[in-house]
Image (cartoon, rainbow, N blue to C red; front, side, top):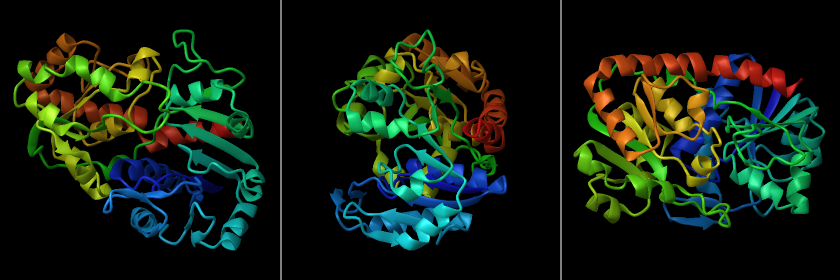
Length: 373
């Protein structure tokens, strides 16, 4: 099958974003499919060196090349800049590829334009990595936004409870099919013991997206802010946020942009960690969306246990050993003690959960079957 996948690697050139797209591409390639990557968001790219949005896309396009080259796709990509200029593949080359494509996968809004060459691909699917926010934005009824989603054949979401009775997120006329982020297990496997004997994560305190929904991670984190008092010297969080505040409370914060500057740096940080401690966005928790982090999947694949806030995901993924859910500070404290007390068992079970639930060869075949159903 010939597949065109749209992502946001150049727009947001950081390790976690890169791995999200890269594992889709690697997993699909391993299944024998032909692939091409495109970005067409109509936005300027972020340049972390200058710490600003920029009209000049060379940092982002270089990042795409570096991300895709290990997959043999170093020349099979196209970045459409905000000004309509094409980088990487030419527009003619991209159009020729689309003419023979069977499936268009729009991952996380990697393309916000319905160009004729995309629309003519026989099957078109959208993967929503930011559940609740996406559905609430659609519910506002803005014509262009609603029409954009109407043109897909299938809509997928990382929110396992979206559309279910125990989740109050409005879905309107749209049906959302649940899928997990696929993880390429071999990319994360390591035999090296954790060198950073701390619970870690990589997180953004607040995002600039969907500013009308006060559903960011800061609203949830405040209820756990004093957790280091109960478990001192157990944390080292990579955070894009208020480092002095978190340092004062014992979280030993690190600048997230440095930790996740490249895919390799992001992977090394996860593999060197003892375990993950993850807090979810308020919107995910409040609406019981069932969202589960692709970052947490990477910790599990690396054999690192994960202690993460429950958004309703525990109804769908085995929880208790290797992967532990919490909703209160007491539950978080108990989870830390449980992992520390029997670490080898939790680490081994973390790998097993990654293989059985999130591995690309488990996730992608049913995803493709549903895309063509």
